[in-house]
Length: 471
Ligand SMILES: Nc1ncnc2c1ncn2[C@@H]1O[C@H](COP(=O)(O)OP(=O)(O)OP(=O)(O)O)[C@@H](O)[C@H]1O
Image (cartoon, rainbow, N blue to C red; front, side):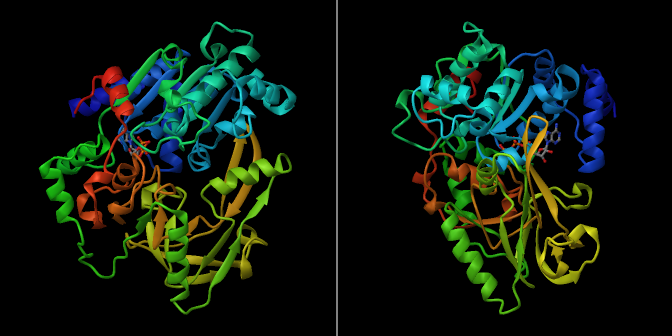
């Protein structure tokens, strides 16, 4: 009781109290969050509310994204004007989750290829991008692991020049950067100088941050042996005990045959083949849902954003289809991103909510694995530029879920998953896949190859040097 009370005490004594309390209440009302902040999370928010640049890292499930969403609220409401805070991510999926845009589209640098002077000229010629750089006072970058050090330095150069403060890192813009370098790395490309592959390799990295913080308590998993195993996988170091546990979960079949476990594939191509084949094998009627996209400005840009976002343009569903919810609807009753279930019916829906968007106004009724049966109506996704809505997509918040890609499930928490670790490629992929699942009981492996579990030596060295974390 005392412990609980003191946690609330520290929570309420965080400055600015009003904003955090508002965030907390907002979260509670709309998504059912009821968490209290850890002292590390509070330390980060203290620095952020004092306009310091902060790098937040930590293992999967330590609450990085959760913390960043609170930080955004504080920055927009208590530190700056909403239009001075820009929220970005390396991928459209993560950007949509935080109601932001990709870093590339914020910056107005196209693919970001070429010399920094050329990119600066590109920004100056683009009045919208130029205006964004002029207005931005705080820039949030989530999922930093997929941004290269080369790009990080180029953006620092653009910021210094456009802000007219060439001696200040990022021209004095406050940076809130989060991510885990042990997860998916930047796509290898000849254009990146090898010595500046990771963002932490950037020449400006050390000068940029006032605080670099590694969050340690893990919230997604609670079994200690699973947490230890995941830490081993994260660092590419598996001991005999970890290998024995993975072996034990290899080729295990679901005990309850009525439970269908989603299969995680590294490649989208494989995901589509499996889902299409399974949908057609149901031999039932297939209903097609086409998303309604709106937004006048930068049509190509938002199409590009959405295509990397999570709501599909075209969605095919049928009775018996395995589906996954891709948006938090009501966390309190279990309608959260990542919840899986089966379509049991289609229900005719008249009225405003479904008008004109979906074929025959039939909405899917899903029996979730939790037992909850719920009709799923359309939801909206926005591509934001600061406070401005650039584009909106309206679609049923479901995807077929016999198979899912590792990239699509990033940031998600799953009750169970099936994967073949021997097919993984690249650093971090095995770790991202395994760390989605809450418990070892929910893990089904059809193979694993211990040589595929590896961490990049530079990433290991970065964490050892910066955080002294050698666990
Ligand atoms: N202080 C806290 N107390 C309790 N739960 C928390 C706390 N902070 C975060 N969580 C919960 O932990 C879970 C994981 O958080 P989140 O998705 O933000 O982790 P993450 O570090 O971004 O993970 P990943 O790297 O896999 O994307 C969420 O359900 C979140 O609500």
